[in-house]
Image 1 (tube, rainbow, N blue to C red):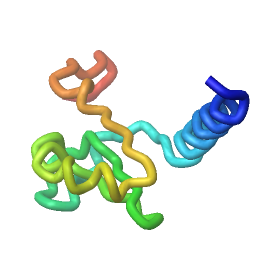
Image 2: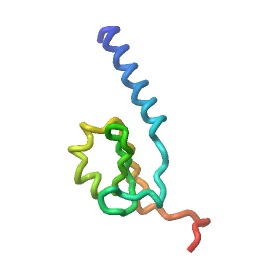
Image 3: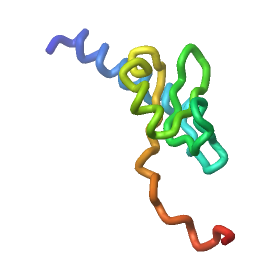
Image 4: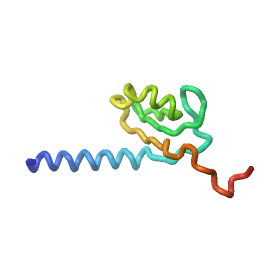
Length: 89
């Protein structure tokens, strides 16, 4: 691997982490899917717009969204996690 290739790889990683730190935020129960209004678990940044999707709709459109997205945060691992004890009944 050439020095130029290594430098390009490092620059790409730094750019990706800068984008992530700029756009990442924890989704909450009040974040809603743009397609159906269900709880959102995925954020996709497309042309500077923050699009939120439930897991179902993200998976449905994923093949089209991935090439267009500047950034994607998939937080679907949170599905079915028990709420904390401090959550009101």
